Amino acid sequence: MVKLSVIVPFYNVQQYAPDTLKSLRANAHADFEFILVDDCSRDGTPDILARAERELPGAVYVRHEKNGGLATARNTGIDKARGEYLTFLDGDDWLAPGYFPQLVDAIEELGCDFVRTDHVQCTARARTIQRMPHGRRGVVMNPREAILPADRSTSVDYAYAWAGIYHRRLVDRGLLHFTDGLRTAEDRPWIWKLHREAESFAAVSLLGVFYRRGVASSLTQIGDVRQLDFIRAFDQVIEETAQDRDADKLLPKAVRTYCAIISHHLGSIERFEPAVARKLKSMSAVALRRMPQDVVDEALDSMDIQRATRLRRLRRRPAAAGAAA
Image (cartoon, rainbow, N blue to C red; front, side, top):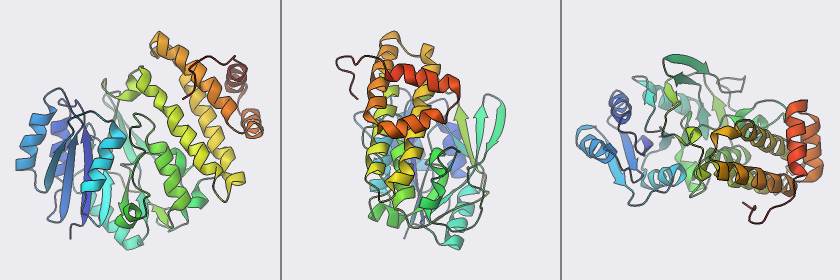
C-alpha cells in the first residue's frame, strides 16, 4: 500500500516547477507517490513534468486537455491517489527536505482524521512564519470546536489545503474533494466542510511548506472575472452551514467572514478590470441581501466603522440585472 499521496497541480509555472520538483525529490520515499497534474498549461510546464515522470521516484503524471482550475486539478489527483494519507502542494511552492516523513509521523502518532501545520510565506526575498490560528498543539480535538469564536481568526480562516495531511477515510466519506470548477476560494467550502463533518483533528508546530506569494500568474494577483468565484464559494459555505445542526452558533462566523472578504475585495477594487469591478459591486450587493439579514446586521455591528460603512452602503445599492452569482 502507498503510504502517502502528494497531489501537485501545475498551470503555466515553468519558472517555478523545477524548484518544486527538486523539493519533492528531497522528500521521496519508497512508499510515497507524487501525482503531478498539469491543468492544460500553455508554456513549458508539460515538458518539465513529462521529464519528472521519468526521473522523480513515485511520480505519476496526469495532463488535462482543458483547463479546469485548481479545484478540478486537485480532484483529479484525489481520484488517482492510492495512499493511506493524502496531502497537497501547489506547483509554484516548495518543501524543506524530509518534511513529508515528519508529516506522516505526526498523523500516525496522533491517529486523527487530519493534521494541520504552520507554513513559511515567501514574498520576494522576505520569509515570514505563518502560524495556524489554533493554540493547542499536538492535542486531538473535535474539528467543530475550532470553528468559533466568530470575531477571531480560527482554523476555518486558515484554509490552505497544503498545510496539512489527511487520512484516506475522509475521501471515502466524501469530505476531501473540492467543489469542481471553482477558480478561486476553492479551499473555503472545503475547510468548512472538514471542520463541520470530520471527527478528529490536531494542529502541530511543523514547518516545511514554503508558500510563494506575489506570483504574477496566480489568481490572487489577477483582477479578471475568475476572482469573483469567491462569491460562489462563500455562498456554498453559507448554504451548507445554514443546514448544520448548530447553524445558530456557526452562521455568525460564516457570515462575518463572508462580509470581511467582500470588504477586502472592495478595498482593493482598483486592481480589477473596470467591467469586473462593476460586477464585483453588483454581485456583492446581491450576496449581502441573500444572507440572513439579522446575522448580517450583527456582523456589521461588530466590525470597524470603515468596513461596516462600506458594506452598509453596498447593501443599499439597487439590484442590477444579471448580478446574481
